[in-house]
Length: 121
Length: 107
Image (cartoon, rainbow over all chains, first blue to last red):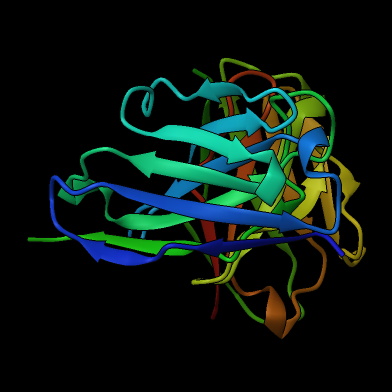
């Protein structure tokens, strides 16, 4: 059974760093793209970027390029989303999700449960 | 960037009624590259439809997707109590974008 389990929910202060994770199981991690999606309170979904764990090829939405870093650890079957310096506007729920096909862009067939990140002084 | 505009913002219907949700792409997108999701906050979105009209595994056949030009439609033939939720369209013909969502609420 394919599962994406997220961890790293936190309350942070502006300027602090944070890395949240998405651990995959039930399939070959290196063969499928994993993306990150933001949902701000009461709002819609925003695609942030995506990584192919097999070779770490990464694509970012222009809106998020330079604001976050996406990475993956093949040995742990885990993808990460990292902020070097959080802002209050980063307060949102973050989801990881998997593309079912080889190419990207694509739709998402499996999603993590989501992680709430709150940035407040 | 391909902008997806969903309408209406909110749909108030009763169980058993038919729901018709619209998603318009500008500029146009290949109809093969549209997906629909259902979300019940605070749960993750659930894939319903991909390729504009292909139901995902396990999705009941009361959900159907169609396309006419740049307009994409998700139809729920007879609303069940568990169908009241927010629905998003997504395009993947270019850098991924999502529509703003349609909330289907109980009338």
